[in-house]
Image 1: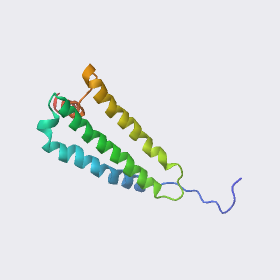
Image 2: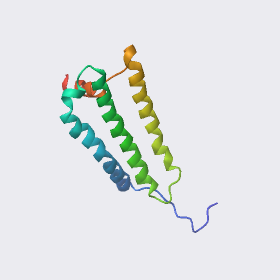
Image 3: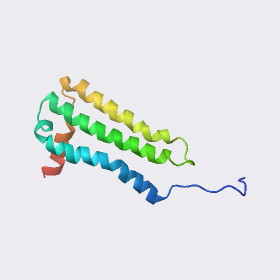
Image 4: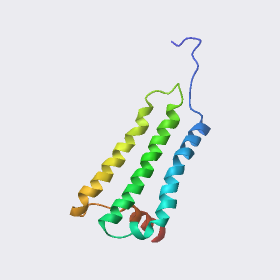
Length: 121
């Protein structure tokens, strides 16, 4: 049974949306701003292109998850906000898999995939 002094705490959706927007800005700048100027490099078939492209994507998504974690960590009534950092391990794992798998034909260039999705219809 809860005491009469217990107050239900929950995150308002506007706060969650604000956290998302704040985390999305670096992702947007890297994947739409910086990548635009690097298109001749990142769209090539070489290992350098794969490295630059996937580094941009890994940094962008890593920052997104980290800033999301910081936004929710600021709330004193939330606990275990470290779970928002767990996807960074998947991002790093995929990043390493691309470089290790490249000689075996398993690496993929994220920029080329996104360009195909956007422009090949």
